Image 1 (cartoon, rainbow, N blue to C red):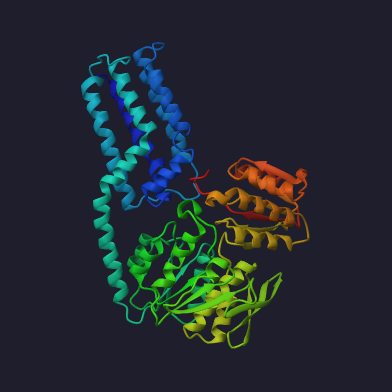
Image 2: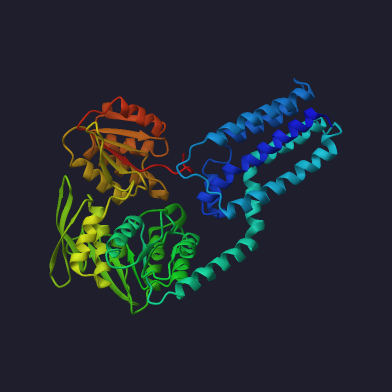
Length: 533
């Protein structure tokens, strides 16, 4: 076997292994669950551009237009060129090379290399003819076929590793459980909801830290393994309160985390149309979120947002249920009233079940943030914090990045950053905040909302109407919701001269750079995950 062929085989083999990186990245973003990953593939991702190029190479390798040597050389050059976008791709949430990712990568690589190397040492080094192919071209064609369906190798690796992962996860679960049980008097506060849970977690952490040694799950560590990692790596023997955010995309997800941490109290921030593609219906969303309430013991309590009909109408009789409201003033045991927004933030009163009115001040803006604050304040009160300490904690709360945070640039432009994760209620409130700014043009930059299932078109049309009511300029990013957003804008009579359609956020930013002037306000409403871009 010549040095030339060895070099070709090494280059192509390295590309095949590198090719798994993109597949495993999307698998990780789909929580390593094959069913979710397969749904992502079905959503137009079976044949992206790189797979089509590799498919074309299979036909080139059987062509008689080139000599055998030139055919495999062309394949090797294509592999080299295909490596560049894999190395340079920018992702909102990069692949994290966790031990699990390394295991999946290793197994996928091994089971792909076995047939590749076997073919090299049989037909690949002899040059014998295999159908339309000479030996080396046949070997590289098989490699290209593997890269075209590389997701199958990744899925096979996950399937083969299931017993291993189950044993590892069980060991971690038992260790986290042991740590939690070893801390006397530990209070576990669980937070879930269709939206608002991360902000509520941050607010509650700031408030409770005025009196207690408090730990919260960081970032979006709201899956079972994220919670386990938090407990095993960050929990201290002297921790007094553990604030545990709980995320869910299908029924049973919340119960799984509750079985681990045994929450003594909790907050359900909202029940709305999020992740409908995996839940299937709003009723399933409600039932899943209320797995938290069902897990609270009779000696504890759960705080429920009554501004949402799906949560307001759900009975809780296994524990004390405390209800709160901002948008529905007649509902709730606790209410936020007399809300006044100003340049420095917000002033409001909380009305208790006894009729007491307690004043609060915060740098936060938006009704959704006041709602989240109210839930956190109720828990702090129930845990015995004095009012003055709670008020101090509320004043010290800073804006959570990408969640309706307001910044002002040196050039006099106001930026409202609500890019983390848009939803029907939060987006409406963010636009209402934008509508309060009057010093210049109000500009909304958005790709719309995702994971809304069959209601996606309806709810994005409604978002378009909200944009028309509160913005002077609309910049629609990406094509995923463009048709629905534009329909809503046009139905509301929006001036089409102020409607701009762009391919991505880079193009949107370029447009803004040539447009903005002092006094303008820009709202970034949602960003798209890597699995949608």
